Length: 227
Figure: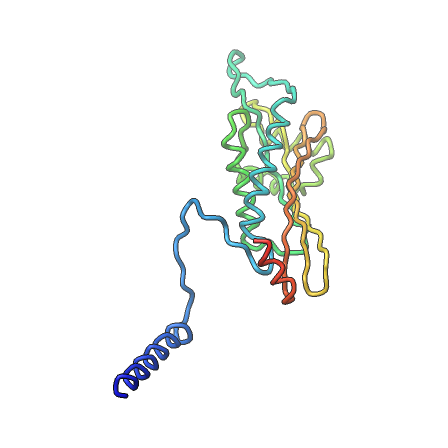
């Protein structure tokens, strides 16, 4: 009997300790994620699991297509040597046309695109600070660059030392929602538009991602079996 009482008492103390750990602790616990871990999936909107692969795939496809496009390199240094054999790209804008707010992911996506282009051995990116300053100084909106005179002024300001600006890059994020009672599917797409500054011809590549949101019990159970 004493042993049983001691066991019950010990169990009660253990229960109190566990409840205190789960219910009494305040604040957020965090840990560093290892490089090989997959991104966490957001419960209410898109996050790293959507935007990171979209950027990686869309930029890769875009540069692969642009690399085979013939373009005249006319920049020379002292009339003798070419300044650069790389094609210069100005990243002009990232437009969010989706139903979700991007929040801090807007700058994250923009930086990821710039980094991906900078890794190329055929393209180089014009400083983002220089692009912003150029648009501000010339009082131009991104869509106004498609006027020939505005394009000439902008590329002239960006092409220092006689080096031409070959492309303008525009990015857009869109979404479409399919509702199924309390559950829904949301289709995301990152579209990249690379515009030739000389001909105004464009190369467009995009990367779609689909994400399922389950709020009903039926949807949650069904999603569990899909994993």
